[in-house]
Image 1: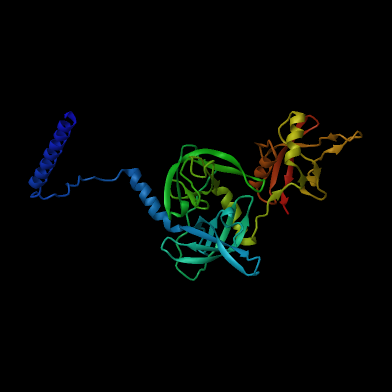
Image 2 (image 1 turned 45 degrees about the vertical axis):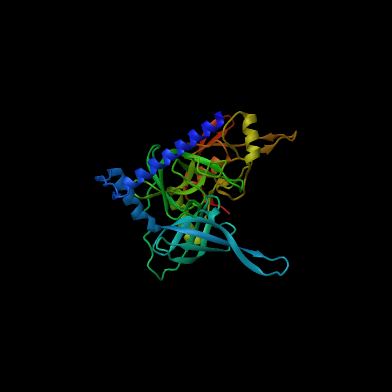
Length: 368
């Protein structure tokens, strides 16, 4: 009995609610629903306007790069191409050269460069430097090309300075992200067993597909090439890296002229793993010269390599502790310090020899 009364009460309440809703809809039916008035925004903030102008001025110089790799069908022996990856790049000069990361085109058999206006062009590989993660492509010159990206400097960058990255993350064309210079002179290991030195660290969002795109300062000048992120997940975690423009401006002209980068060297033999053990054993920081190559710049300067004692133990020779006044703590730093100079340039080395420091001048030679 009580259940029946409860059900009737619920039914009555539902009927009353529906009637009330219907009445409300009926009463409102004659009213015209109009969009709300838009509140005037006013002028954009000065920094917003500056960012918009920077993007609009720079985006046409940024390109989208897609690559394909040649594969062979093991059954038919037919060779065909398959998509390999995508990345970004930017116009370097009026001759149609495009700069990107080496890892963007590594292993590819062809590359397609797409401009911001939608036109696409097949690109030829001009040269590459895996050590610096830089590659130069070239597209045809018989058409109207976008302007080159203005070149800035990286030696005078300051932590906290605003930066802007333009690229194609995850294939999303011409994306702008902003941030600051988070740190300078970073090192990053590569899959090839070498490290890239002098990198700019930034918190501007850099994701897969941004690689090879420009990092710009607030004046719209190129200050680096976005090259990598530090992230276990593969997505931006606020730690991105860029090859500094001073390195780019030194390497790219050689790649255009010679197809490769010729590194300045001393003419010595060193070993990363052995050096770490020897310097720890000796209680010093620097690079132990294992061997001075005959007829080399190091030999001409009188540098000394290690020697074997009568009991077979290694007797250290010279230990390089600084190049041009900048400290050298390991082999990677030695290569990076030398790379700041040109072949034929005379540099000063601080050498630890027989327990004391001496200065030696060496004329850098061309590496193999």
